[in-house]
Every structure is written in structure tokens, then in C-alpha cells.
Image 1 (cartoon, rainbow, N blue to C red):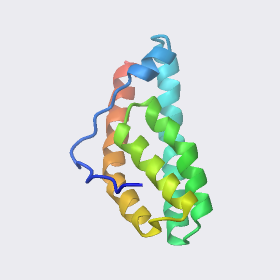
Image 2: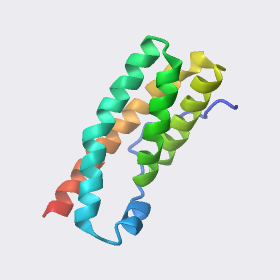
Image 3: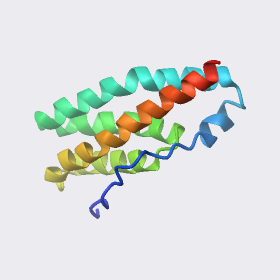
Length: 126
């Protein structure tokens, strides 16, 4: 597997088109999905961080696999791709030394995602 290109640390682009489509335009459903993302994702990320520190690659792969579709929901392609790469590396046991680096590059992007989703959530709630 090729090494991921450097991640742009500018504010992430969110594309909520997929979420909008599956919600059939329902703001209530979209709010519910955003709330679930905002409540569950930080804990999954903490679990990945702990598992990387413990070199528990099976858990890293499992959580990366579990969290990856949620990034697809909100249209953050770089997070989806990075989690797929982390999952592959952790499952295959190749390039394990790159996992922590890939994950650490993703964290500031995800901070931006959380900020944007909170803004979107606030706009929807009005």
C-alpha cells in the first residue's frame, strides 16, 4: 500500500450531500445523525489512540473499520481514506510505524470537522 500524501491542515471540507440524500431532506434525521457522530466519534478516536500506544493492532483495525463509514456519511474523504489506510496497515501488519503518524495528522482535521458540525447543528436547530 502506498503512503498517504500529506494531509492539508486547513479547515476540512464537509460534503453533507450523502447524508442529505439518505435523510430525504429531513433536518431532524440529519440532526440525529450529526448528534450521534458528535457523541460517539471522540470515544472511538480515544480508543484508537490508546490502542496505538499499546500497539494493539487488532483493536486499531476494528475501530478504524467501525468509524470509517461515519466519515463517509459526513463527506470527509480524507478521514475516510486515512481510516481505511490505518485499518489496512493494522490488519496486515505492514508499515505499522506509519499508523501513529497517519492518525496524528488526522486529529487537527477532525477537530475542524467537529467545529463545523457544531456550527451546522446550531444552524439546523434554529
